[in-house]
Structure formats: structure tokens, C-alpha cells
Image 1 (cartoon, rainbow, N blue to C red):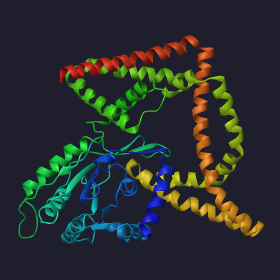
Image 2 (image 1 turned 30 degrees about the vertical axis):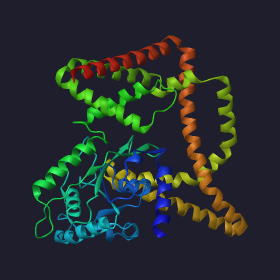
Image 3 (image 1 turned 60 degrees about the horizontal axis):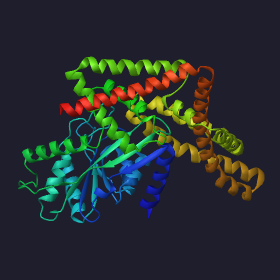
Length: 442
């Protein structure tokens, strides 16, 4: 019961922090067999929350032993059936105790349970997967070779964030094809051969790269992100995150191909994208603003104005009450993250999970003191709703403001606006031509 309550609360927190949360590939996850999920690790403690909350079956985790010594996080780790990993670099910890942990993992899998592992070992912000450690492979081979886990499967799961450190960005959990673990002969300490562990780790590396976004350098990811934004902006509906991920994976493949075989073509499209972004910046627009303005109608404008007028009072209340906690969460994240993007959202989520309820408690206490408990209870119910209305109001206002600015550009600088649309179409055509060239070369 405790686990269910905690998971439900964590689910709610994630859906508040991220504007869009999508899960793809659920049909690939076995329902009644022992499973090890292996995931990439780009976003600190937020990563395990995703597999805990959105996997279609209960999952146990491995976490570094030092987490268990932290007051709140340690309690959460135990409540969520997390098993400790003892690392050499952590002062006072004995890595030899990992044998006990590995044995508990095998026992869990023998009972038909599931386990989530992050074989990179540490969270990071590098543009590609780090070399995988063999721990996940050793656990899998040990469990599959013990005689009780012949049906053991490994399911690769990719975590994709559009802007992992940013509030109200988007996140995808993407399950890949299961991998059958074949048994091997174990030594006297129940450990698999090193060669077998390394071979399985290499197989996991390939599988994880198929469900994640990887590039040799950050510049490639930046260019690909801009290209995808332009390419997809012509659609009337926002593409799914799984589709966005696959488009970006294809673009990365093209980027690396043309960088090697036709760098002049890559430089040409990069320059064109950069100049287009500069033109948009001159008039204060984003890529999506042009499409929003083109789709605008008088009826839609009237409806949007009425929505704003109706929600404005509630949004103002929500902003006034929640803004101090929101700003303080950002300040704490900036101070304690030390410019490490992979821990920024972790700090924001943890700080928000404490500061927003504290804000509500203070407001309810003041209402109880001044107006009585009936008003206090009503306040407790309404406060979270006003926060949600404030967030939605701010997002809708930002989109509407962008579309309005674009519409003004169409009205006052029609030739320039048409040139922007024509250039977007030309860039998209060039991207398609480069994709055709890549397909023919393969």
C-alpha cells in the first residue's frame, strides 16, 4: 500500500513537471516472465522515477548505497524495494558486499519479478551513451544460469527528454525489443565468465542505442534539434515523442554520414538553418509561431480571448501563491547543481515536492486562523487547482503571444513573412533530399 501511494504521488509530480509524458512500446514488455529493464541515465534521480511510475509492472531498482543514508531519499528507496550497490569511490563502502546484492537480485527474478538497471553506472549529460559496465550482464547471466530463470528477458528502455532541466518540457519512455538471456556455466562463486558478460554488455549497448538519441558531439544534437523543429513545424498537430525521437535518430545518422562523405552539403544545410533562426530572432518569433499564425481564425481568436478572461482570476491567485516556491526551487537547483544539467531537474523536483505542499500548509493554516476550518478545507482543495490553472494559463498565453506576433508580421511585413515560409519549405525540401541521398548510399 505504501509503495502504491508513493508511486501515485511520484506519477503526479512527474506529470506536473513535464508538460508531456509519453510511453511507447508497452506491448514489448512481458507480463508474466522475469524481466530486467536496462536504461540510459541522462537525468539523475528523475530517471528511476520514470521506470517506477510508467512500467506496466512493479519494478525494483538498484541504487548507490550512499542514498540509503539520506533522510528522505533513503526512506523512499526502502519503501520502493531498492537494493543497495556498494561502490569503490564511496568512502566507507565495501564493494565486496555487492555479492549479497546480486544474490538478492537473482532471488527476485526467480520469483518472476522485474528489476531496473542503469548500466552506464552514473548520470551524465554527454551526447552519447557511456561505455556500459558489466554489472547488468553479470546479474542477468547469473540469474539465467542458476536453473530457475530460463525465461529471463532483458528489455532495453530509452529515456528521451526534449529539455531535461526545463520545467514543463517533455519526456518519453521507450521500450525496445526483448533480449533472451542464454545460460552459461558459472564459476564456484556463481559468477559468469568475463567474456560472456562483456559480450552481453555489448549486445545491450546496441539495443540501448536503438531506443535512445546518440551523437559523437553536442553540436550534432543541437543542429539536429533545430532541423527537426523546422521539419516538423509544418504539421497541424504536434508529432508524438516517439516519432520525434525516430526523426532525430535519422537526422543524426545523416549528420554523421555527410560530415564524413560530403561535408560541404552538411555545412550548407547548417548555414541555412542558422540563418533562418537568425531571421526569426530578428522579429522575435519561434519556428512554431508561423504555423500557429497561419492556422489562426477570428473564431479561434475570440474563443481564446474568452478562455483567458474566464481563467485569469484563478491564474492570478495561482501565480501569486505559487511563484515564490517556484522561484526558490529554481534558485536551489542553480546553486546546488553546479551547472550539471543531469541533476538540475532532480533538485527542482525534490524542492518542489517539499516547497509547494509547505506553501499550501501555510495558506491553509492562515485561513483556519482567520476564517475557520470550513474555509481552510475549501482552500486546501482549491490551491492545487489554482496552481494548475496558472501553469496552463502561462503556457497558453505564451503560445498565443507568439502566434499574435507572427500574425502582426504577416500584416505589417507580408513579404518578409512569406519569405520566411518559403525558406522553411526550402529547408525542409533540402532535408528530404539529403535523406534520399543517405538512403541511396546505404
